[in-house]
Image (cartoon, rainbow, N blue to C red; front, side, top):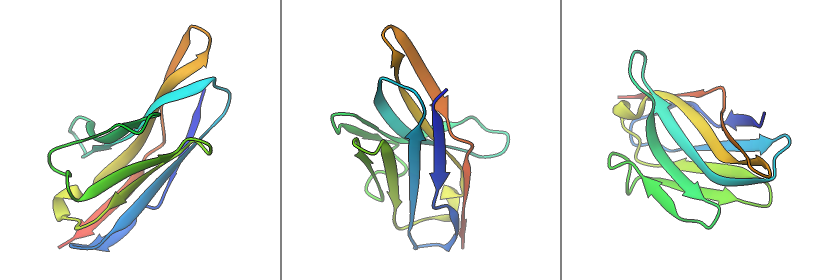
Length: 120
């Protein structure tokens, strides 16, 4: 299994910024896409943003223009810079990575989740 360790969450006032990081480790051949999802209690886990190994990024409409995803392929780390935070951004944020564990063997793994709370 690929281990994904998230950091950078916490409590911030509306309009503030946070930067999430997620480092991947373990045995794998390559990582294709890394991304961030978020989930409120009792709701489904939704995509926030993801980025391919080639740098192509995708964003949810609700965060486009405020959040920026980036990636360090050499270190297998993905970042999420969150600016102009709103109370509705409050959620548990999960890191996700998918790729190849070995030839012909895919993986799709999740981090343990990190809380982001935005106060009004």
